[in-house]
Length: 142
Image 1 (cartoon, helix red, strand yellow):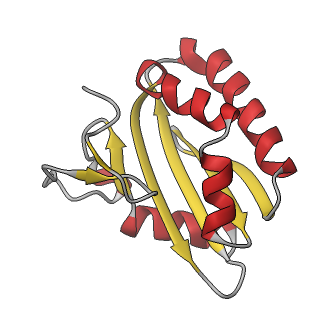
Image 2 (image 1 turned 120 degrees about the horizontal axis):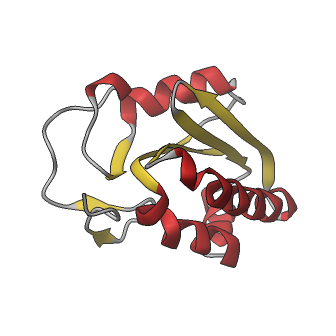
């Protein structure tokens, strides 16, 4: 199985309607995608998390490049002040809390500045690599 975890902090409460719309569209697509095992939306403090479980990384990649997910990613820098992602393989289905702990410990900030309260190192990397292995820069310029 492949697990993908995202944590996002909204720029302001005024971004909530757009965030909810984009999330519902992406969740609908994820749940309908071949290979999706489970899809969850969780809130911890001011961080909105998505946890998606896939039969394989290849199936997650098909969803990743789909329309709904692409639209959500394109809106990230307008909606979010902070986004951190983490993806990993596992043999057994972890709980949502286990996924969030792994996100906290091993995630990579792709939008905003690293935050100690979310488990980030305060040292920023010069280059970032997205979950598909393509080199690029931080998707949010803050």
